[in-house]
Image 1 (cartoon, rainbow, N blue to C red):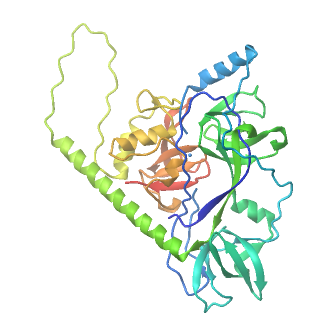
Image 2 (cartoon, rainbow, N blue to C red; image 1 turned 180 degrees about the vertical axis):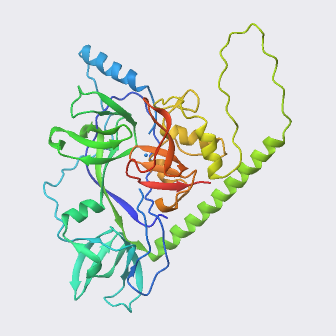
Image 3 (cartoon, rainbow, N blue to C red; image 1 turned 90 degrees about the vertical axis):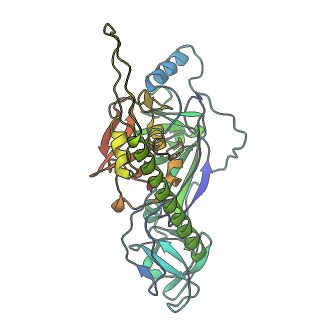
Length: 415
């Protein structure tokens, strides 16, 4: 379930890439699994799992050829999108974490109106949630986190710990160019290992080359470098959730579950109708024809997550194409998920970042076949038994993989 609200603190500027083609549905969701009712004690010990996507364009080999050709012609290999709404701000040289508190609990700590366990609960600060310390009162801290202001017991948070703050946050690079090139090293002359469309957000794994204008990010092809010139850098934290926000979230999640149930029932009904329809005989083939027979694919059957996996799995071995959405002729990761679910009557965005807001959130421990698994710059379908089926990259095409091969940012259920 989506417990924590993530807020982006935009720090500065843009990333590396050639503006080739424009795609982009930008959305951001902050799924965090699980929720329980307010307790009289101040800490819940319910187990949780944090959760936290690619699209558009041209084939990777062609992109490398194009990059080499433009360089050889003494033309700029990369051009940035016009900056019409971007306001540059200066980054702090030194971050001050002296008044930043990070919750260290199994699930959440109650935020109370006053510094007393008898006081009313005004919100919840979840594990690794961040807050600003306003003052200390005995064994309590008065904090502000999101829209929640109240008191937490000091023993359930750490204050001024830079390592804890960085571990609890996610550094993000949001793509501003129409198409962003991710390179093997911090140079425009370096090999292009991947491409990301406008609006996607990527997890930053290192800023050691930031002074040279590059940051290292996580993408499906591995960690690579993008120019700061073409991304917005920001930092995400999880903040406390007020009682009103929790009630609204639970209501939205209940509605999403109902919608998923309706979608599954509709897919099941469509499958039964198709199965009972008269079978049309195929026209006899010409005896002398030498046309190569195309592979045949089964239509979707059923309305469960396992049905989704069965349908998706028959396309394993088909090609990956950046920006594509054809399950047979080529698709990228979000195009794959979108097209598979489209066959079941479910409409999804062609964006791995936007997929983090579809359906409703489930914890990694509760994953079921058919669930959508989101990573930095990538998205896949959970196939069960610790595996995923996904349009991985141009080298492997549509294939199977280990669900935990990279950090999972979100798991979403739509059927």
